[in-house]
Image (cartoon, rainbow, N blue to C red):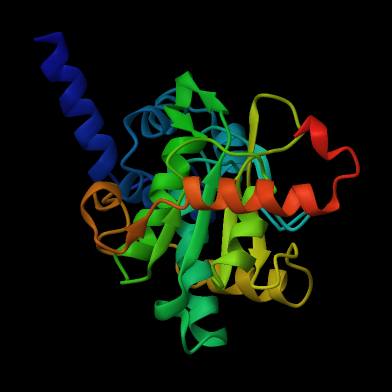
Length: 253
């Protein structure tokens, strides 16, 4: 009975009109609860709402991440200013829109996605899951995706972008940042990290694509789409071969 009551309460939260006294916050709460399909992060926002934690809700929902060192970086958790399933989907939708504008051959050349080993149980958030959702957004739009089948060093992604002649790539990592953080590091077709004006234009496109598209949450595409390719063995082999060419002590490789 208690379980049913809790389910009814969650349903009421989802369909309610929010009256916190802050119209911007009310809109943001409604958007989050409609769009987020991750039970853990949705529950975090529901709990804050239920407990009247309006200041924390505003901090989490009424601002967005901005590009730092060639990408997005923040703590993992619920909210539009954090790294989570929904914000990675939104970011990838914005990337798609911008890359479609920049490259007429985007759907022929494709996109590279890699990830590290970071994760956060309380948000059901991991680099691997975020990489799969990144791939799913693009696969649903008929873009070929080179998704590494296991965690890889960050340099593999820009190297793969160049070697495979992809238009761009993303590495899900926060590099040397604290373990609670994660990030969305973007590389252009040259293999270089993105700089202005690309970063500002991508952010504009993200803001125009905040509602998840049909198929964006469908991470099953990673297992079923013929457009998904695993570049791991090929890139690992090529990378080590090229490394030998510039390594003085080759006998150690």
